[in-house]
Length: 137
Image (cartoon, rainbow, N blue to C red; front, side, top):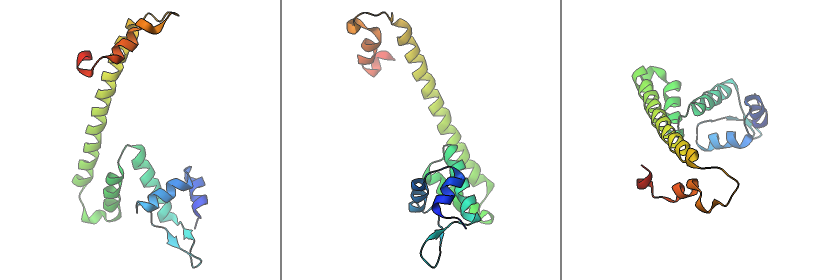
């Protein structure tokens, strides 16, 4: 059994992060007779699962759902899990496309700037940023 501080140190996260996951009812530690929380191997595995899912971009809602499937896999199908993962992939692909668009737009306005050490009064970057969104598309 580990204390909250020991668990945080072991997994390289903050005590506040552990508290947050407890408040979200993603992590449910046991209580010792003195009232202190105790974290066993199941808690460690569960928190590792949470952290890995979070690092892959899953939302708290997704993680709740994935954990419920993980806890009772015999009551669920792989199709359910794949559906959640595919949804996350679509979301990431959309964000990548948005970032590509941002990159291209910023590259264009950056290339149009002379970058000289004179007044920014007529700076093309500032001018482009001041335009309405519809004008730049």
